[in-house]
Length: 420
Image (cartoon, rainbow, N blue to C red; front, side, top):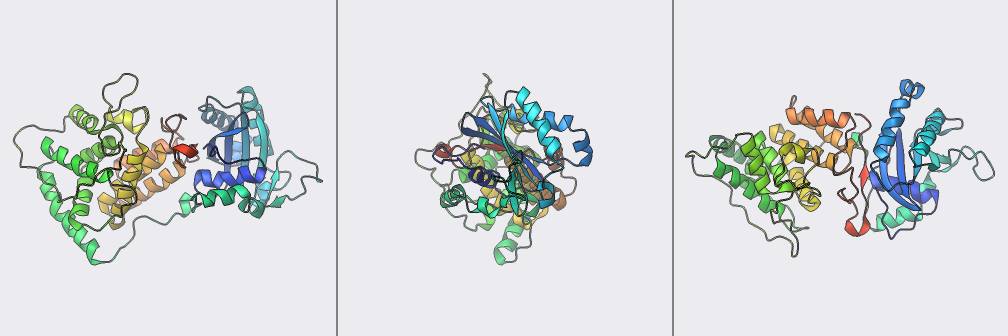
């Protein structure tokens, strides 16, 4: 994740204080690597710290770190931070040989390590400074990082540090109330109606029209309770073909979603019952925004995006992150009632997190989807992808990566999830 251009980062406390804002949480048992472009911070990578067996033979781990960092083509240096317990940060540390190996590997890759630090629970220290006059043992208080000027500036700008993915409250939880009962009742009524029309091209288009209208909602407009609408949305997610089409439409447009459905042969132009949809209020898109315009996107001269290409972040060249953010917020509202619709919502939210380069969050969402609906196939496939440490195509490219702090404060990062 690149630091906002306007912020001055000069002290180690500032660099270390930026990392939790970059990831969204304070890392634990993690190696964090940050590339450098001269004196500017580049991309941020987080990986789980290796266990004893890997530490004894770390070649594969070292190659993985180098491969991830080489995705930043402009990098000419690296900063390393080992977030561990106080015992792991004490000198000598069991991770000293790992840092030495990374120093050698990254030097040969043209990204020499400029600085390295250990960050424990209570104190932090420079990894290679042995002069106790400037680097006293056991180190400096971690509170210095939390109190750094940069951390205060990031909070002022609206950035927050949340719980680690594994400590994140479950999204699926019992929610009492008349509205929730009404949503489930509406969903039960919509499901058989949609099932009768699951192969209808007209119904396919009607489903995408409803979702597309909601994706065009103005930023800041509250999500007001509408039982018929929410029941319809949850029911539509229970059909895998429509679920996938919603995902593809969000970043590549309606035509790409329909073309992909045609490739799979799931649409039938024969006579079908008339399409059905809820009485949705169709909002105007933000002035000057293209979020509500289903522009068709392509890459490498392709005229359409295949579902697999979109799923892997190959096309479009740059996704519409505003629409993906809007989709994520809608799904957050639909997930709380559980069941297959919640599993679909959690799975897509996991995919969005992976696209943003946040593998640990992706793994948490996908694992929760499988707890909610064991055997949910798309969640299983995506969790396997995340577990292998694969990086979404968009997250691996600086020009396409998600910008956490907005286009004026560029900030893109990669957390492959540590092989989980």
